[in-house]
Length: 120
Figure (cartoon, one colour):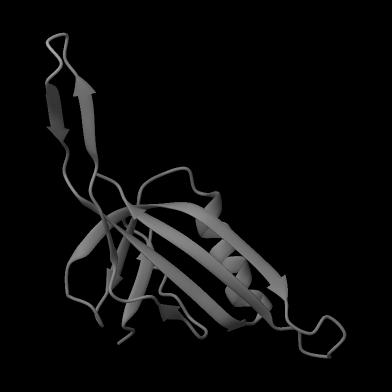
């Protein structure tokens, strides 16, 4: 069984190819401060959400196309990383980039990176 999956609801698309995930996961806490008319501060606290940075050091074109297809979906995706925990998170892809490793070789490999943010 694969340890990492990123997929649409109802469609399982397991991430293939080599993949590394930065751990620990970034926990993003949103806090806002506003100065009141009497000079005091008012604080607003919002729910924490997670961010994962994925790195793909060696992708074949089929793996790259799978990622490009996932980036193209304008919807919330599901993310599960069994190396971290068994929970399934609803995420959005906020960044994706890729580049050819050796553009003149017979078998083309690509490296890529992706940022997933929890959709809360």
